[in-house]
Image (cartoon, rainbow, N blue to C red; front, side):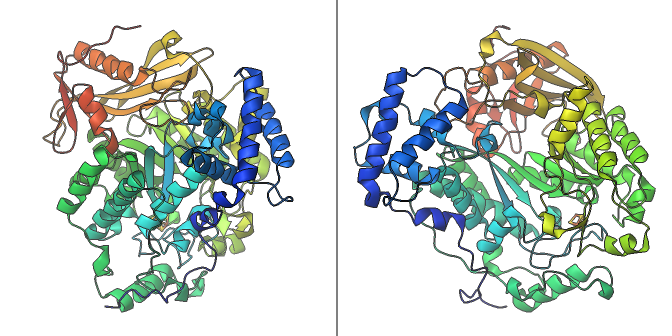
Length: 625
Ligand code: SF4
């Protein structure tokens, strides 16, 4: 087995965190103090009156120009934030600013939308590994986990850190912090190939290392972790595979490299952890300053079974991303998915019984599909209780050079939908999405240089929403309704419940809305018709998701008018408990994340092995506002 070698080089591109760290605020203390003093004085003159974001930006730009870095260039936002923290540490922060760091950082956030759903998402990629799929639309970049291209933003970050979960997590947190985002509540999103196909010790180790990074970052975010080295020389692998060598070229190339470097188990000694080791790190994260409040992995329907779901819960997974792609066996077969629709139904039912949040990946424009059949399928996703996902990534098939679909494109068997066809299809899908489902993504994040054929319109959702608005039929999925950064008083909101049938019983989407259907928060409550196969759940009602909107705020802080932390989370738990009790359930189980266990304990839940439980009729009760 090969040893890790630091000499095995990755990309020469410096990681984002390293670039951010290169700035030394102490060197510019005078300029930064003057700049912040000016901002404080202007704020004082305005008396803290509310201001449109554009005005804030204009005011900031003027101040940046008046206080240039080195007398020439402008300080970047991340440098400005680094300066704020340096002045705070050295006690030189102007008095007017010291009162509310959260407010200032909120205004200076470079990409505020990232944390407006309530938590800070940290996306990580597993390392290259064979995949059981043979899907003809899937990219084959052997330097990446299956289905990812090195040009994608997340992929580049993973490459920079040799796919090391600890370093990826740390650097992402450091970048978020540098640009002013709170990093106390983190959703870990683990992507790459088929999660369940990695060796079990690797999966346990991967999650353990992510959590260790969260724990360590919460203790000392200034400590730079040591640089890592790859477990195998991934740089020796070809970016684009020779498709004339037949299918499974990715598996052959990656499998051969890993077998040569790591032995038949395709696993380095350093990539193993036991469940006992993981549980110890999880316990530390329950009360850490940076907590994991959500964990999702992506896998295939035919790799979901009862044992896998138990392991996912042991890892702390709360959301499953399931590659569904099509609801037609003929289309699945033509695209060599290797599973049928029955497998999808089965996986969704098992995962729903186990209380997971269900996000599916659905791909229109596959070989054998038409815009009409796709729209029918999409409607079927919600008409049929066997599907009905909570969230959806809608990825129109885009052809990349390394996908085997190239042959069908060249032979004329496949063509991408024309732009107007695709726009009408996506708009039709959005229109058919019920208000309890969230379309989280429309279009895959490929760079337009990688796309051989297919849409390059990155903001397709925006176009589709406009298309619908112009016809008086606005989208009403969760994403279109969530309040995001808007201000609203949760106490003035209205309760309602959207109820529907699922493969396991009834589902209740409890929501609090304000104004014109703006979503302040919601809970997903599963009311099973029969006991779950998992003994721990038994006949309990299951709280599958609790989501409160508003910009992500540090734990224990409040922002005036923001939906988060307004007691809405507690009220949603009580509404769910009240409803479950009314329907005759004796207990309520919650599929809590590692970092929310403490919160649920405070709401009257006690720890089980995989879930937390509350006997109904006991525990805190809130009046229904
Ligand atoms: S299962 Fe997913 S990652 Fe694997 S080949 Fe199919 S699409 Fe690609």
